[in-house]
Image (cartoon, rainbow, N blue to C red):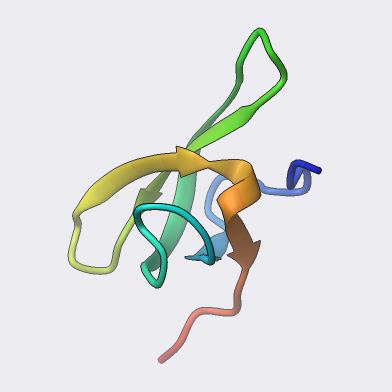
Amino acid sequence: METTNLKDGDYCLVVKGTHKGKQGKVSDIHTSKTGHITITVEQDNGVKFKTLGRNVELKLPTG
């Protein structure tokens, strides 16, 4: 099941996949033709990566 309650600016933690353990702010949310949600995550150090919405959990920002 996809995480459909993600919004731009939400803080998330990647719990599965290549970027497991990384966290940051959600942006650029897209739903593909096949129904998969893809997002861009920007880490606190400014590095961005793309992942699937189902690989992340919402998280309260630290600090």
